[in-house]
Structures are given as C-alpha cells and as structure tokens.
Length: 585
Image (tube, rainbow, N blue to C red; front, side, top):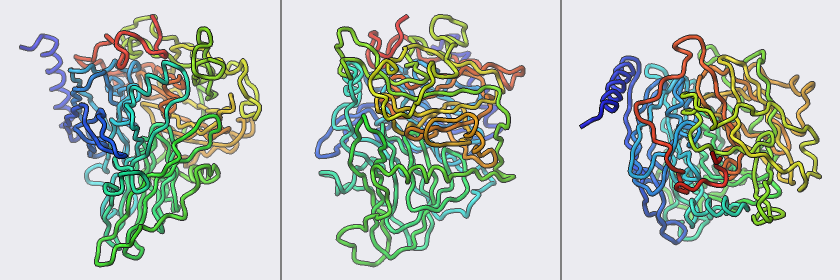
C-alpha cells in the first residue's frame, strides 16, 4: 500500500509526465549500481558500476527532451549522480552533488532523477558526484539536434563515443579515505583507459585494446568525454586531422587541428575523415601536466583507428608524431585559445555586455593545521585547497534543502568577492609560509535573479603548486571571454576580452599561473555548485556554491521539491562519522 505522500508524489509525477509528453519526448532509464568484477592490468577487482558496465550506459536523446533516470543503489555506500553540463532550469533537486543539492542515495534504496534539457546540444556526460565514485560511475550523455533539425556542419556518416577514464588497482574509496584521513598526497592512477580499456602499452591489456572500425572515405563524429580523475589529456589520431565542432554541449566554429587538449569535466565533438591508406592507426590519450609540487600518472592509453578492407594488417599501428609532450604548456594554451562560438542567427550568443556582480577568485593549494603536526602534508599539516582562501566544508544537510526550508546553521552567505590579501599570486617564491593556511567553512555566494556575473579566476603558485585548474559550474553555461598568463590586470586585461563570439562552456581551464574570465546571466534560480574538476582538489576544498534567488514570476521561481528526496541521515562513505572536510554542526 502507498502512503498518502507517496500517492501525492505519483500524482504530481504523472502530471509532469503528461506536460512533458505534450511538449517534447520523454525517456526512461534504469541505473542499477552494484559491485561488479572487472579484469584490468593482470588483476581482477570489484568496482561500483552502473548496469555492470565500465564506462556506464550512453543516454541518447534529442535537444529539449526530458529524461527520468531511476537509480537503484545496490552498492555498499551512499551515491549521487550528476548530469554534467545539463542546466536543469529551476530544478536543482535533480542536479546531484552530494550535500549541495541532495544527500546520498543510501545503499538498498533508490531515487528517480528528472533531467530537464533545454538549450544543450552535443555531447555531455553523467557521473557520480559523491566522494571519488566518479572514477567508475560515469557515461556519455548524447544530445542530438531537435527533431526536424540537423547539425550546423555536414552530417557525419557515423559517430563514436570515446570516454577517457582512470583505472586504479586498489579500491578508489579506500584510497580517498586514506588521503583525507592522513592529509597527504593522493595515490596516482595505475593507468588511463579509452572506453574502459587501458590499451597496448600496459601489461595484460593488448588483447582488449579498444578498436574503432572505419570505412575509407567516411567522416566520423567523435564524442569525446574526459572523466579522468585528476589529469588533463592530449588526444590525437596518427596521420589524421581533427576538426573540433563542439565543446561542452555547444557548437563552435570548426577548428582544424592535429590534436586536442581536454580537461576532466570537458567534452568535445570532433570530426575525423578516414582518408589515409588502409591500415591501423593509434588513437592516443596522453597526459598533460604543468604542475610542480604534485605528480601524475606518466602513462599513455591507446585505442586503434582500424580501417575495414582487404589488406595485410601491419605488425604495429602507426604511432602519432603530432601529439604534444606531457609538459607542453604552449600546445595546451594554443588549442584552448582558438575555440570560438558559432555566433550565427541559428546559434546566437548572448554575452552580457555590462556586469552587475564582479568576482575575483584566487585558486590555491593550501594547508590546514593538524594537532601535534600529525598529518602527512608539509610540516605535519593537512593538504587543502581553496577559493579565496576558503576551503569548502560539506554540511550535514544539503544546502538546497536548508535554503528552501529556511533552516539556518548549515551554510553562511559571506563567500568573499575577492581574496583576503592581494599579492603577486604567480611569484616563483611562494613556498610554505603563512599565506598557505586556509580557513574552512561552508560559505556560499548569493546572486540576484538575472544578475550579470563576471568571474575572473586567478591561478596561483602558492606552495610552488601552480597548475591548470578545470573549474566547473553547475546550472549554467558561461562564456569564456578572456584568458591570459600572469596576474590579472583589471585595467588592461579587460581590453582583450572577446565579447563577440567567445566559446560557451560549463568547464573552463584556468591556465597555470594565469587567469580566465567568464560571464553569465544568473537566470536559473536554485543552488548551484562550483568546483575544480580534479577530484583531489574538490575533496580538499576548492569549491563553493551559488544561491540564485527567485525572480518575480512563476517561470523564474525555483520548482518545489519532489515528493521524495534521499534523507540526510549519514555520510556517504564514513557512516555517522563525518569526513575531515565535513562541517560539524
């Protein structure tokens, strides 16, 4: 028998479904999360996976559709799912980040997400957004053009999803537990993978290398997703040019190149024509690293671009000579600086020309004191990260629920618009001293509805730890109006802004010891998370949230919550014991 609240919820859901079906197509997916055995790198291990697949299933819909995903958690700890790059207009209840918009779906329970698509078109992805479960719980989210329309480029003959991921021999959640418990550096991955397979350059992996079969003369749309945990990646196909046509679910002016650079959290739509001699050609995803104080997995994952036809297979595929080296900062900056929006009547841009809210946010690696210098970081301290010297702490109740129900004590609305101290952020001499100690708190920024927002992210070299940071904003797509090196100059650097055809994205790479400026209109009421998409930095505190207030109409007001939300009864990993980065009430 259903309770009254459950019957009411079903009635409301039915009304929503009828409305959706009258407007656009409605799709239904079942995601069953359970521990599943996989064999990689000569060893078998159990991982949390969706529908027993790694990567998980592809969601394939049309622009403007609605998707319902019922997540059954048959694992051993709480999990949430995020629909990365989907704006979810007025519907943060289904956005997914734990302790921001919901509490975890506890083991043995289920929760149905309502994913509302609007202007997104192209490739996005979905992934777990609790602890480090994203390592194994992820998959592509393909949004085709609206029915009756087509691409703004010649329609490709076929398409192929390519998902980049990290693979760890050890249990990822155990590694996270140890890293956060002792406060030191995180363990590196043991390999990368393309579509779940490490490739030819790892032990016990050659027989399962992913192969993409192609026909000579055909053009293929590659839908590329980088869900690697902590590393930017270069990608290239031997002897084949790439034409980039989309970034983060938005089209760009076609950019012909021999490689791309893609950060965790980014997606790219890329055309490639099979126009070379019949044979086998390596597709490589190789790490890009510009840091100094940290380290990275110095291995390369491969797949094979394999021509169909009657020919003698080569002894080894052709190797790309055009892929940049691990440390090629110039190649990374050159690529990202050449992306532009279409800015056509069919795909217009709406870049705010004036700004009502301006923020300057310093990104830094920091430390927090440990009692008796008992942690594994420098000088016995705990490694942390911060935005404007604030290391974010998860509350015990999600911020959205506290905000909607006007419950005090779970967050503060005093996230600063500027760093507490302004100095030479990119100096080579910023080693361990007092500027590295961050404050911990659950501080958010409140925005008026329809505020025009400009944020300049400033990379820093505090603790000699400057590196590229992929910053992801939930609930919005923003325009990347400018990037540069060194310290941002608020008089001269705005003169270089592109306000005509800047790329539209949800994740922006902030260059090492440099800056990036974004603009957006705060037209989506609710609570929306912003964080570095390196999982270690997010866990250490390089995150915050925006609360966008309601407007004056029904269409500009936050939707009410569904009849059921997962209860906030325990932490997703640690049970009733909070993590080191969870706020005690």
